[in-house]
Image (cartoon, rainbow, N blue to C red; front, side):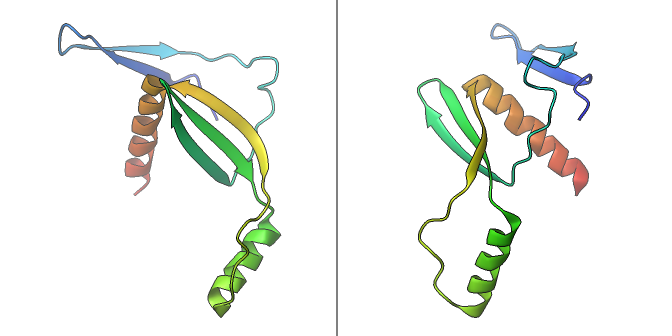
Length: 108
């Protein structure tokens, strides 16, 4: 993932003008390795959004799919490993939602 082209847009409260600034993110001490996730959970708190990224073993996903197809009862709870927890401001979460929306519009 190339973060050199990350753009930040901020609306000026006193006008309808928008400011766009390109930001180059440099890897931090623990950000050099990618984290894989196939599960997310999002929760709102006071002024922030908590995003948990997790991982469920592919074999478990396949087993759940087989149970659903056969009409058998799925377990009430399964275990997943939390890969990462991100706590972001509401503004950053809104920007993320816009960026993801634009990405998916381009893909379809």
